[in-house]
Length: 242
Image (tube, rainbow, N blue to C red):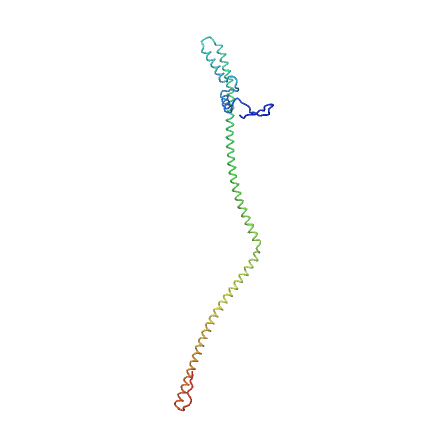
């Protein structure tokens, strides 16, 4: 229990209020009242009063005297007290039954809420998956849009095909020129080789002719010298021919 403060008149000071029982004592008192059906701290508890009524009735019955009227009176008092004690029990039973029904309803509501929570979690996971798929799809669309823009920047296909055709023709012409150049180069190689061979043969022939001419000149000089010696003219020396 919370301590409440009260102001003292004339002093302006706040002092805590004093209570007869503390929190722990309050709990024990409330528990005792619930068990004994005592609503106030004054008077006897109903259970004790019921016990006294029953004890008085039992003692009166055990007497051997002619006390039928007293027994009937005490029995009525006991039954009246029992009814008085039973009424709160019935009320408590009704409250307990209502609490049990409320608890069952609460459990059903709890199960329903848990089911809704699980369903909501499943829906959230599904929405997350859809969100990821949407992100991927959006990314693909953006990539396709970029590719479409690049394609739109390119010339039409007819022009591209025309350029490709012209390039193929040019490549074919270059290939033909390359083939012709290769053939011409091979022909020039053969002609040059033949020319070198002819030049070599001509050079050999010229050298052979020169050697023959020198040999003939030597022979002629030798013959001339021999003729001069045989004549004995004593003329000048024979001319030396290199």
